Amino acid sequence: MSSQIDQKDINNAAWAACDTFRGVVDPAQYKDYILVMLFLKYISDVWQDHYEAYQKQSGDNTRIRRKLERERFILPAIKLIEKDEKTGQETVLDEFPATYYSLYERRAAANIGELINIVLDHIEESNKSKLEGVFRNIDFNSEVNLGKTKDRNRRLKQLLEDFHKPQLDMRPSRVSEDVIGNTYIYLIERFASNSGKKAGEFFTPLKVTELVARLAGPKPGDRICDPACGSGGLLIQAAREVGDRNFALFGQESNGSTWALCRMNMFLHSFDSARVEWCDTLNSPLLIENDRLMKFNCVVANPPFSLDKWGAENAENDQYNRFWRGVPPKSKGDWAFISHMVEISLEKQGRIAVVVPHGVLFRGAAEGRIRQKMIEENLLDAVIGLPGNLFPTTNIPVAILVFDRNREKGGSNEACKDVLFVDASREYMSSKNHNTLLDEHLTKIMETCSARKKVEKYAHVAGFEEIKENDFNLNIPRYVDTFEEEEEIDIDAVQMEIDELEKKLKKVRVKMAEKLKQLKVEN
Image (tube, rainbow, N blue to C red; front, side):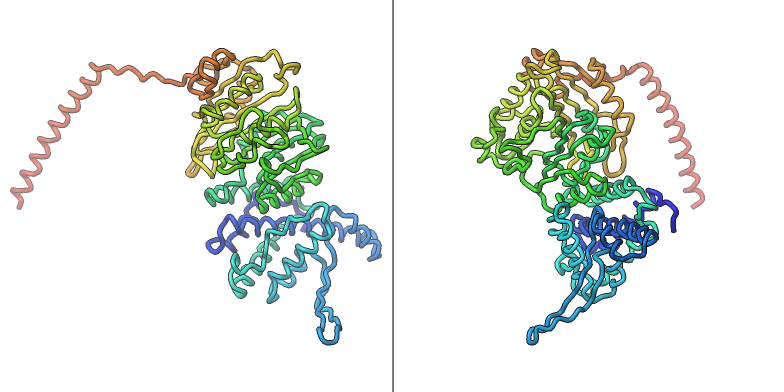
């Protein structure tokens, strides 16, 4: 079959494969099995496509094998050997390439879970520079997650058959990498919105990622970083915003399985050179060069909201001196992430956009002091308030803070001393489970930021003195007045309406009395 696959068809087929686990395995866990299988099927289809092309060019197996060893991903040959402990004699039990198709052929095997693990191990070992550690958190032979042997084998057989549908034939001759990458993001979004808080922790809604990326404004040649990158959606959106391939992507993620999702996400979008580290950004950052924090032109993030026990006890002695403006409270890590993001952005050049809960705007004590210092340094550029219920993890309204290091002394934007406040909290599309931003909402926000002028009941430009008078409190209603006066009520008109209704009611009561009298006579 050579016809092209439609985006909708591949999305639906991939989501349907989840039925194998639905109701049996927690969605926060079975997402890993589905997304890993999608990745395995994709690299197997690419390998198979190229293998068939090389076969047509030349029937020489040695030459074909050499060409396949130069592929983007190497899928090695596997030889399963049994050794006799007494004689030492080895018996070859099976030989096959480490591909999805080999597993499909063996889908009825009694040890199919073990075979899938073996294939993934061999692929990881043969592609260490790219895939080391990516599959270590996934076990297709887990009794805890997938049930006892008989049930587990049935589910895995069904899963392999689901991915064998024509709609999931992902050979390059049939489907572009954009479509496959979009399917991966589609699945992550569906897992997040259908699975509640636990599964939503690794996902930022697509329109929010687009808005954050546009506000950060990455340009060709930029180094772009997300220090709390989750499954990588915001990094990918920032890359798309650049408009060409002249950029470098960097990320850090503390959750092992989410880090693995991010790595696969990067490959499915052809960002093979993206450097994504598995680490605790606040306590053990790994994006280091020459014993110092790497610096970036563009920094974006949707970090965990008000993270408890983020490492405040180590912050005063931080070897990179990120918290010199003050140490945030140990129960709320919001300003710790913001401090880190500002410190890793290039001096007099870097631009930062970060999603935060509204408490970041007005909480006092240590947070208030850090906020004041950043405003006094002229770093804060804009505060954008968004609607509530946008995220699968929380229904609270959020804001985006934009910092611009071009505004520092000596920077190209040093003359700009004001802060733009935008209240976009009332403009959204409401749906059953959550609210959504539309293109028109994003356009209005971006046009307002570009114009940087007051818009009645929507935007306000506040000078330093005005913010100082408000004790450096950034609560948006202090600056954008959205109060709507209630329409005046015409008392005389209302009284006339009441009189008219009472006349009608009197007539109805007379008719009811007559009907009741008739009923009594008839009885």
